[in-house]
Image (tube, rainbow, N blue to C red):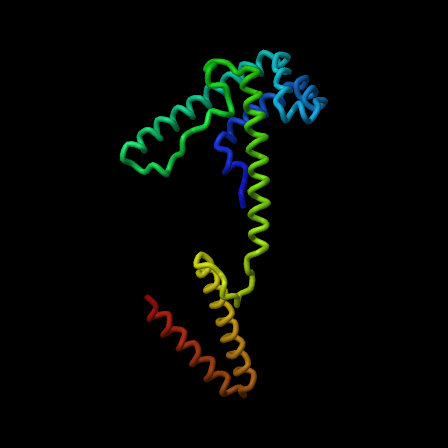
Length: 202
């Protein structure tokens, strides 16, 4: 299952910005009254001019931390691209903020964050729908021969449970059919067999 935290590498930044903006009751009220299209297009970012000074300072600090994170990722990616594992870190994206202004969180930052988030959420929704459609076409039965090799360990475990369950049932049936003396002997033999099996396991 795809989660937005997995897809959107800037999710912490987004969360912190949203929390800071929601702490300003006037901005939150303006946002609630805003037209959905204004929110999706980022036009609502123009309301940032009315945000409390303390919240603006907090937003500036959040942006500075995000820029540090992006610089760190860029450095790591540069190091990895020089004969190290290139696949482990991807190029950091700056689409969710205005990287021309490195000191303050402005309207352009909020616009870019809103547009990028909207775009990514739409992409996540599209991928989830594709995953769901794909999952509907896949076999779910234990006996299906079409299970992929990735599912083999799961299939084996399920089959082992079924086989073990059948063995337990057979033991129980056999015990039920014996008289008391034979039950006791049979039970002792089973316990000895179990001990031997445990001792010989690698």
